[in-house]
Amino acid sequence: MCGIFGVHGVPEATNCVHLGLYSLQHRGQESSGVVTVDEHGTARALRAMGLVSEGIDGRSLSELPGDVGIGHTRYSTAGTSTIENAQPVLARFRDGHIALAHNGNLVNATELRRELEDVGSIFSSTMDSEVLVHRIAKSRREKPEERLADALQGVEGAFSLLVIIGDTLMAARDPRGWRPLVIGRLADGWVVASETCALDLVGATFERDVERGEIITIDRDGIRSTFPFEAHDPRRCVFEYVYFARPDSRIWGGSVDRARRELGRQLAREQPAPNADLVFAVPDSANSAAVGYAEESGLPFELALIRNHYVGRTFIQPSQAGRDAKVKVKYNAVREVLNGKRVVMVDDSIVRGTTTRGLVALVRAAGAREVHMRVSSHPITGPCYYGIDTPSREELIAANLGVEDIARHIGVDSLGYLSLDGMLGAVPGGPDGFCHACFSGDYPTPPPADPNKLRFGCGC
Ligand code: AMP
Image 1 (cartoon, rainbow, N blue to C red):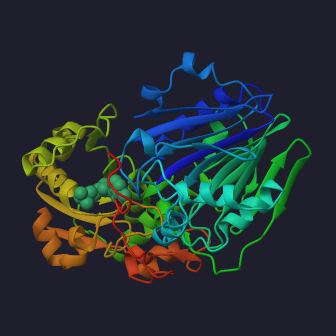
Image 2 (cartoon, helix red, strand yellow):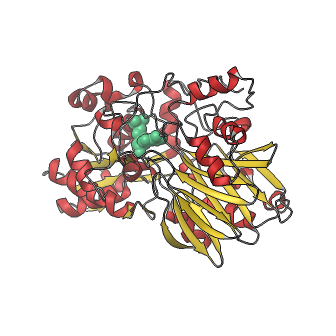
Image 3 (cartoon, helix red, strand yellow):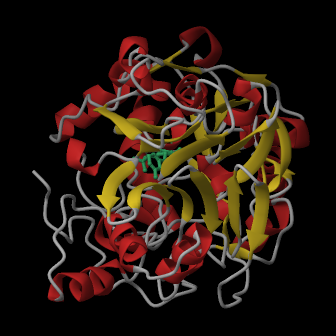
């Protein structure tokens, strides 16, 4: 998953993009980058590993002048975490430069890449997104938006994209619309971002969503829109509402906070815990759902788990002992809240069950008498091919164990998930129009020929 942010007609674009990326950090922490285009049409890039605050400093940014720019925060779903795979991509071709920032995952990238390699194309990264740059460069169409539309014909899967050709900024969403993308105004300029929280940070006003299947083009003449793709039914990713997007964002016309609260309320109706004393969240992604559960059940909401916000994703230890240590470094339990209590622990999802098992151990060690876990989504039984980094079936606990066995494995007294219908009915605009493939097995496209994240090599 990734965060993308772009501006056109915004003085000192680089500073605005840099700021915008801070609020999209939750969508990707592996690398970040900015590309700007100056008044002479020169494009420059800055990319770095790690968090925006770690990798991009003000002095380097001052070397990226211009009022047009795009940025990216990366969380890999195709290719490894290396600087070659950091975005935005910036490439030069016969008609100038192409800069591209991609959120989503292409399901036919293997075939598209093979086609290009067969005619001699070489690649400098192991990302699926690089095929798009080649296809844009190869197109014989004149206008930037026609060139982009041409390049995207036959590309299957999820893309919310920002592309710069010359000093024209384009924003595109695939026709099923898996990932969000919004447009805002900032003085006389335009801002495009994965989520509205990024518009808020830079002081832009929300204008509208980029529609699914739409290409928006912004140049010195203004803004225009085309719908060049074959129509498909909408398949917005329900997991954006469940886990991924920030609760202070509005995506697809709905508030993420309200969506999560409603998921929590529905969970309380479907999976009550009548004898419990209190409810708490696994912070931060389950906070709003736990508030909803507390509101609906009438149980008090407490802060029983504290998350350390200064632990980066770089703290990785593969051994089991290492995983337990990882949970302890990231979370601690509040004994004064938990001791002697029958508690409801709300989380938004269980993936492998590893973190959850460690958290339950912490909660018990802090004196909880009974632990009733409630999950504000349906069990995840399949991988995502459209941009969320869910592991293979072998690693997904709910693909291998039933609810009772999962409860035993993670060490809780009871475990309750939200039903599929309950989940889809609780989100804004539901129940139709969502992709729920990882929960239901109902995949909107054939699976990729090679779903392995490292299908184009390890990149190292
Ligand atoms: P685990 O118990 O190891 O399955 O971890 C469960 C936690 O992972 C939950 O708190 C979720 O909020 C979180 N989570 C869900 N999806 C993802 C994801 N794609 N990447 C990272 N964490 C996730």
